[in-house]
Length: 141
Image 1: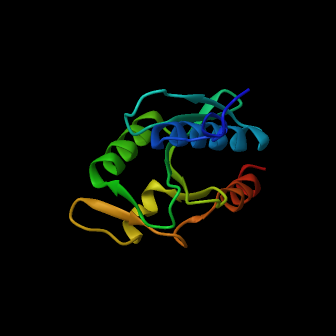
Image 2: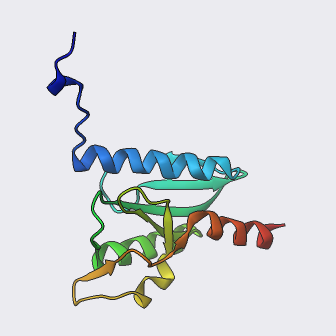
């Protein structure tokens, strides 16, 4: 029988991030997309496809705290360049403690608060991923 300590589920930040990537991927799947996880920390966590065509490159950010998420300018630039090179749209999907999934298209990241080196994603930034996909569904019909 497991002790009380063994039965407590402790999640480290890396595991939490990977779990969030899968959560985002499965969310896209429910909207008719297929996806592939990169499995490395190169700034692009997910490739999202529709009918075999690459639509989105996604960087996922998750925190268990209600404080800002810092995103490096370098990571945003790399995501933007790679998305453009591959004919896809770059997205930053993020979540805070017990929130739904939010998204900021990479072309709109410069609208949020920033410093010389980082963008500062706060609760209230971006839009719900479901709203983003609803808007895209109308465009793709």
